[in-house]
Length: 331
Image 1 (cartoon, rainbow, N blue to C red):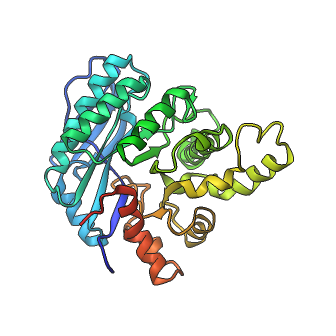
Image 2 (cartoon, rainbow, N blue to C red):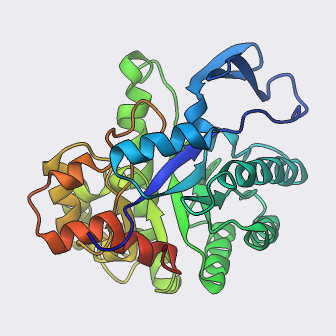
């Protein structure tokens, strides 16, 4: 193996933060030195462990899994896209600065990505620039802002700014619609979450946004790009069959743009990984684990290491592709 093994999809929750200003805002209840609960008002949102903030715990897990470097992303529930822009700037700044405190515990192994107030593209650009100066290496965004998807003019302006700054962007689904049908058995996470990512990739493809965005934009999508790869053929068929309704705004069918994006390997089976390699190409799949959350992959990279691929492809998936996504390379 040449080069570090890089996990591009892990999350952070700081060990505490100031009062955000509203009784329904998120806060952290520390239950023990190694456990805590993210609270929303007086309701439990998510139980977590110190792997979210303690570098020693995180590094021990990385060593056990054979991971050299992690990209440390915000947890999407903190995005704050429903806030007034000025308030969202404040909240983003709080969590971005706290993320740097976590990653500073092991700066050679933990790479921080920031969040931005995407509901205000100008403010998002300013916060990104501030964070780059402070030490962040990239940015994570949600796949939509209320009813505005990634093809929204303001979001595209922000993505163009990222391309101009040569900054990698990681897109994470969030804020899924909840219904009585998705409440049982975590179906919101099992069905709605991958569908959200497919929806946003189709927005970028069918709107012609990919045709207008520069090829230099480095943009990655969580959870293997959601459902996109598995239904790209259906989307292509519709593009060809009904160009008047489906393909009028884009120069090419949706699968043409699969090589424009990176997708992570959090798909949990070799068969699913084969689909990603076929649709997106072996140069565009990167190791991701969704660490430290319980629906993530442990050991991180297990599917890639067990895949029936050549040594060259395995090297790409474990290391080289992520280095290209992150640029400059991690050493």
